[in-house]
Image 1: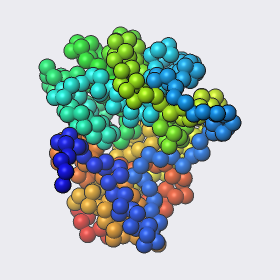
Image 2 (image 1 turned 180 degrees about the vertical axis):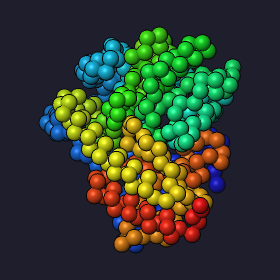
Image 3 (image 1 turned 45 degrees about the vertical axis):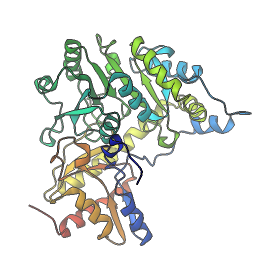
Image 4 (image 1 turned 90 degrees about the horizontal axis):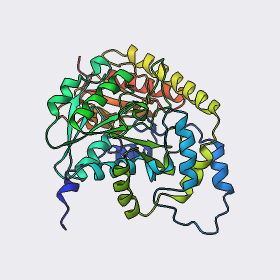
Length: 399
């Protein structure tokens, strides 16, 4: 076999997608699979964006500016102003998905051997990208018992070394659904100022909150201007995951100038996706109100069903569209695979994302799984029926 880099050998498989071959095999056998493993909404993408893309007169689908179409960045400036995020077009780089924005940020902020502190559990790709770059993820563990609240700042302080470059958070949280309070963000501000660190916030779920605890962007926090980097995306907000359109945002001109080198190296973001994005920016507020109400109904359904299942521990997420649950099983990954290989209920089964892949600390999350409540309520009811029955008959059930 030809040589493979140590970087790629150390890059973990996605816990969200690693069981796909087993799901495919189940479907081949005729089993219907309810996909609760991935944040792929089933809500229709707003017509305003699709229409603009379909009506575009494109003699040539050309490159755009490496930072993205100026017209789109100006549209985004107006959009973010509604969230108390004052920006200029020069403070936005349009990217091929939020994933590219995150990868760019890590490339700019970190050398091989540097460290990024992340509250765990966290979005699994943080670990994947960091390892690919030979950057070390240093976890600060939050607990399901506290609803995955932000660990104390003293716990962060213990982890900071001369190699620490970044504090990375996801707000609202994936996979936890936790929303950071303004007070918690102020604590993080004081810490990154004290140690001269970047604070990267993945804010792609900012529109999904289900209580009085609304989302606050780090760009709305006074004193964080020099330290803040925001990752954003249209994928979840507009149910447009396949468009692969994201944003890298910072008011730090030195960071943005460096990030532009990476943006130029990859040439430009998708022209077609940006046309779609411009149309989506005209989506009426009523769309978000209806979507949030729909997700809240799904959230309540899933929480109610899970909390009634014997042995299941399920906190109350107030944002995004995920919930991390602790299951009465010996090993959640084995259980998730068993669901696809050996179980069906009335010809149907459930696919979930094993929890351990959302942790960096070995041994954590072994009984946990992430559930994405992105299906309609009828499908979610059936999925919960499957899960409830499966937990009763799983050979590795524990008390």
